[in-house]
Image (tube, rainbow, N blue to C red; front, side):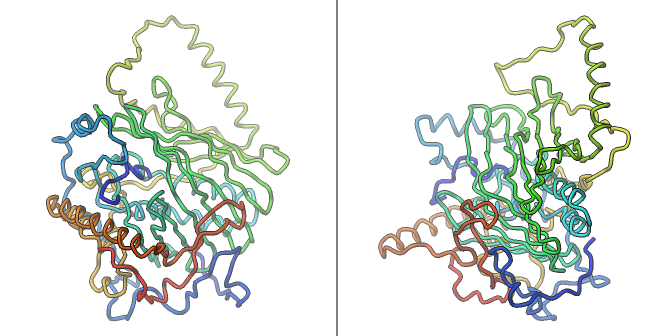
Length: 480
């Protein structure tokens, strides 16, 4: 930002069990990550300030205050053609291409299918735990399907918290760097069964008709009961037809999930859609032990579901498919299918749903989206609730929380003029703060995370330092 948004920055950019176990002082740091004392605060302030609850469970909204603003009157090309010769990072995109969420809130969508983590924690065998973790890694990108709106770039020092007692977790994130943009996050199970943390800084490439976001940063999941840590990096996300035509998204690349205790690895291939869209949304892979012996095969679509099956049954199915392909290739080709690369990339038609191999086990299925999702930026039910500001929350939230950003709030309420004005004001305020720091030769100080090494991979990472939910916000910067 600093007044100029990074071009399509962060364009991609996811049944709890009871536990009576207590952490000793020695357990306050788990693998280099600070623990938060869950007994001190539930994060919601005084009881009288709690949002309304029904049967002990907080209710969340099911729709946005205003429907999605139409983008039909705007085109990216009308902006880009005026900027030929300029750096892409200097191009400011109109707010009409945004969605009313910060990128920090989009990261929180990893947690929509958090039940898979709780399930993993309950499994007695490492193979079953890896199956659940693999399903969670795939589910974390499912909400991006048909989400072509660009999240707001977080301001430096911006934060977002989410406490879901019904889903058994709490989450905190912070924008720890502006150039390059880096978002750090940390989540923990309320039953002290897991830690989930990482830092995200996508590298963007503009290919003329598409924008590709290559993920950078390590994602770490720790299953505390089993003393296991899993790490991986998300697949590449590509948005097609940013110049002309209908926008559409695909994910591709290889994701490797490593169990650092056992040496087991899950290798998942997110398939590129191919010439005629045959591979669109497909995910295929396997779980192998430390000796590279395949233990379990995984297949499905990141937009729909994920299945697993024994390697022998999978191989038999593959042989049948190969015989079927040979028969189809023997039929004459009428030449009716042609690729046209001169205009917009045609939106591939989704092929028939996943063909289930006999004996397969369902690992995960995507949640059904609300019926009015298309009018709400294609948000899921989980996403719709992320920017909700319930009565009394502003008294307990950090002053840097995304819910308090006036530009996002204006867009959510359908006031695009106000949203644009506030976005420009916030960017100018951020520029002025940076100039003031430069005058005083002062370095930016992060509040809740510090740079260090990932304790399992040794790579650079941002680690949570603890204390957020004690709610001492006296040192939070004034960014809004």
